[in-house]
Amino acid sequence: MTTTLQRRESASLWERFCNWVTSTDNRLYVGWFGVLMIPTLLAATTCFIIAFIAAPPV
Image (cartoon, rainbow, N blue to C red; front, top):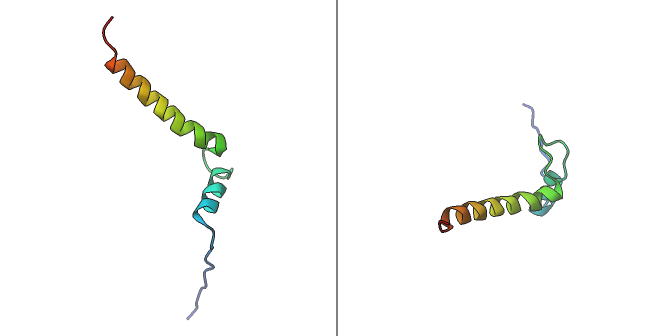
């Protein structure tokens, strides 16, 4: 019987997130700019759509 030992990484959640963001092995590279840009664009798009719908007729 063969026993396989797995080494468990004790990296913190923040360290794993940092490694994922800056990894170039991902299909789409997010980067730190993307971490700020993606939520900001989603909020701006949502606000624009709500304002466009709620605007009074001219």
